[in-house]
Image (cartoon, rainbow, N blue to C red; front, side):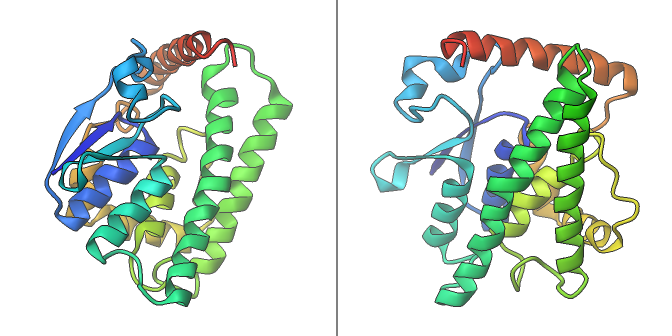
Amino acid sequence: MIELYSAATPNGHKISIALEELGLPYNLHVLDLAAGEQKQPWFLKINPNGRIPAIVDREEGDFAVFESGAILIYLAEKTGRLMPSDRKGRSRVLQWLMFQMGGIGPMMGQANVFYRYFPEKIQPAIDRYQGETKRLFRVLDGHLKEHEYLAGDYSIADIANWSWVRTHKWSGVEVDDLPHLQRWLKAIAARPAVQRGIQRPPSAIDEASEEDAKRLAQEILKMVETGRSRDGGV
């Protein structure tokens, strides 16, 4: 049995989607990030970085894994699915996984901060991160023009990137001019396991009206500020 410690974020949904796709039994523990539950001593024993997601594999002597990319690799290797076993195939998947971890995630995350959360709108910062996000989307669109999925068959690379790209409107970045990216987004969204995964737990931003989005953004800003104070202001 897998114990999943998560919340309704793109990084959290990566893991619930993967677990649903793999058919692995798991218990979901939703952490209250606003209350700082992720900073409690009991959770820091699982993830010293105090972030979600994290898992504990009961079948492997309560083995803990943190960092969403590392968890995806662990689950794929545990089951022999969602990542090829040959060296080149595995490398292709890991390249696109790292593309998300080092590019898509950080750039969209910063776009969210400056576009949605900060009360002061610093337009150069908004333009910078939205522009870099759109550039990365164009990279995906160009690759997907010639490929159904990012790295051969459907894999953890698709799960990782899709979990973030699907929230593009929250970052203020449109994809109307990226037909191949749109095709890929829709194809993955139609998968039953993906539909189950993004409800574990459901995200408030998915159906948020503009008014609700403003309220939610304020709540998230408070949560971010709370996290910073607990981290010593970093």
